Image (cartoon, rainbow over all chains, first blue to last red; front, side, top):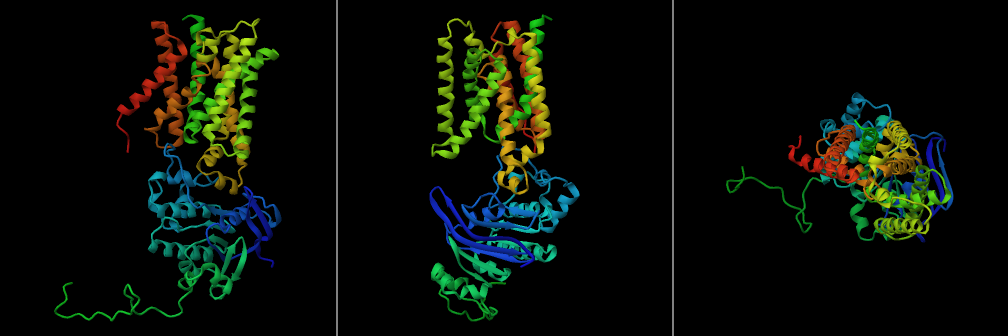
Length: 255
Length: 261
């Protein structure tokens, strides 16, 4: 494929005498959102680190588009509380960034109000947005996001995934992300790669959710991760029974 | 003013100036114990320098750098926690230095001077080394300021963005080693780290940017050197410890000021 940004073939990685990746393959193309899923210890972060060049595989080939600009959003950022650093200064650690371009990047991710706040004083959701803004400031061809919604409440998670989708549409960059919450990410992704040391199955989300390897890996949970094709026009109670729509009458205690 | 006092003042001020920004990185990167280990190893450097009859500042710098490299290698190769490893290296190198020095009967050395500094005995040649070394480290810090901040915030992010992280980290260790070598004459191997971290910690409460903290630490360091030397001059106290006591007093005072919001 000519528009591939990064291609990994038959990658093996051992970390402290534990085999972490055994023949993993991965490809991300321009404008494509690829989501890595898999149980804990499946090697998701290791695969991401290999893509980023932070880790050299023991065998297998890693090809990156020459001079590929990568925007990386780490899983979390811990800055020592003694380091007085505002969000603006944090963004300006990227060379060539001034206040205007930093403000513009923050506006794109909907976090312009924190520009002068200390980095240690903003909420988890704001921090994820600031990290995303920093990744965008590099004008990336490939965005790599390691669990981008960690520490964000459920409503914010869905919004963050929609934002990532919009950014892809706007900049045409490829996106590689690691995620646990398949039910949220399924609708926003082009390709799902299900990893358990090697690639169990990959493809379009719908296709993957019916794959026997996927169901075996996630067991009963697989069903809840599958996508709904109908619109929910009713609500369930705690036992799963459909609730009758509420009809107001004079006995209602609410306004 | 007496010449020896002027030499002492200039040496102390040069060191305080560079200790501000360098000490800020030691605080931000939690390298206080690391600095302590390197400075303990400085005594081994002194012993080796005397044995091989080379310049002591050079011998101490080389010894500190070698220890830093050894430390990084050991951290990657074996399971002991960093602080355990640092404790082992700090005290065994200090002891090895003391034992080696005791074998050299023919060399007359002032051990207390190496351990706690002998600021008032600084010669013009010493002063040249101290001012030259401090100026070099300060220039390097200014040149590497942004990359150093970037790796302090997040090493992997910096690496993905194309910075040579391992080289920058090594450069920081090298700078710390040079400062330890030149500071040994001033406050001695046992007190060097305090001059790096106390002014930086005192400046931290009132700083809003990394640069404010670095400059504030330099200013407080300069003040501590002046106060310490004055104390030593009028009360006949040991100069190195007097400077550290002054810095500690300034640190306590920083709590008296109301924190800015």
